[in-house]
Amino acid sequence: MSENRLVLQGRVLRAPKRSTSPAGVAHCQFWLEHRSQQQEAGFSRQAYCQIAVVASGDILKQDSSHISMGCEVRVSGFINSHKAANGTYRLVLHASEIDLLSRG
Image (cartoon, rainbow, N blue to C red; front, top):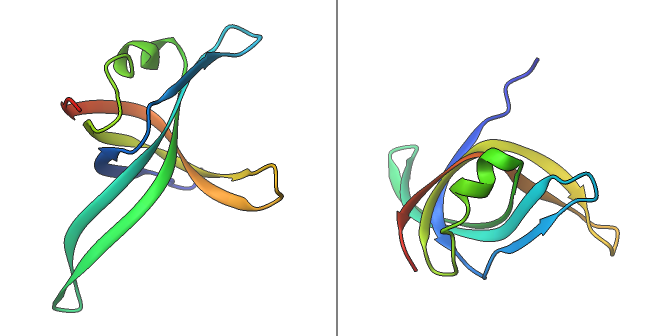
């Protein structure tokens, strides 16, 4: 298996959407905004991105229960491509662990 692991810290942009699939699997979806200063080739640069996050399963139901708009979180997981309704693709971070760093 190839490695696919991402850890990203940021602020939750919108209120999370929580749902349960017909199979009874809990899902939590939200947008994460990351801003930081990084070093590249000996220079300091601003890093910025927004990424959709999906957390699924019973174990994440508890981890994501305190997530709200504006809170700071650290999300660990893998990235996958999702096809939107308009036919475009976007990267989505599938969370395996969510750490609440501050409340919104």
